[in-house]
Amino acid sequence: MTATTVTPTRRVSPAHTPAQTVLLHLLPGAAAFAAYVGLLPLAHQLGLPSVAVLATVGLLVIAPVQLGLLRAHRRRRPDEPAVMLRARLPLPRLLGWAGLEVALAGIAFLATAPLKRLLQASVFAWWPDAWAVRDGTETGYSDTALIVTAALLLAGTVLVAPVVEELYFRGYLLPRMPRQLGRWTPPAHVALFAAYHLSTPWLIPTRILAVLPLAYIALRTRDVRVGIVAHVLLNTTDLILLLVYLHTR
Image 1 (cartoon, rainbow, N blue to C red):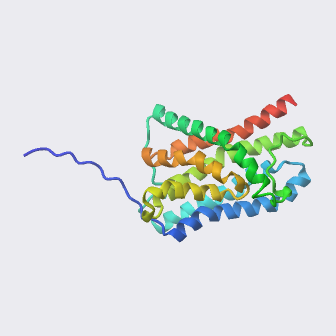
Image 2 (cartoon, one colour):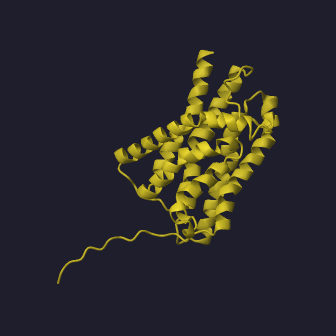
Image 3 (cartoon, rainbow, N blue to C red):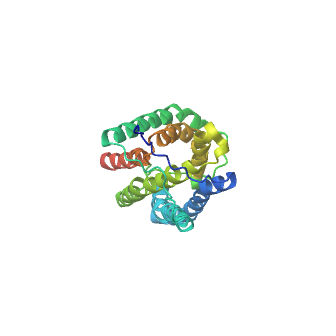
């Protein structure tokens, strides 16, 4: 009698329908954009830049909505984990993959900067100036306002939103994309993720190029933490720029 080796089977989650996929990708973005536009007048009254509103939306809208959808899934399917990419890479490999994504995303943002400006000046020239995302490095904001903004960025944009977004988008939605997409699954997922950021539509091509490698990395490694680490590091850029500006002005 010969011994046989049993290879563990990879758990395959039930796929969403195309309509479910579009709705679950874009619904949180619509809620976040509505909150962003609604809170902008209050931020103006308080003397805060609009990036502080985005950070607040990350705390008060994005995290509760996406975590609520994950909880709803667990209630409907208690025998199936909501987050499917549950592998645990060794720390050096985890950091290596995350570092690769950060580098590729940085290249994408730099390479597409002229395209972003072109889209802002042409396709989205109609976009209301009141909705523009201002990072706080313009003149006219007090030190107190910038310190408050930095605190909100740390809490919402750096620590909370990227963690929840990666659990939701890469951990929950990506493994459940419609099976008929086949090899187009990562591009379709990333295009919907880019469109989810309704407050900066001119960055859709940039985000597609920046996040596409992460979708492939997530499917290859099966470890959602790679995206969490990379996303946190990328979102830290705005906070660092604001702190440098506050220190040197």
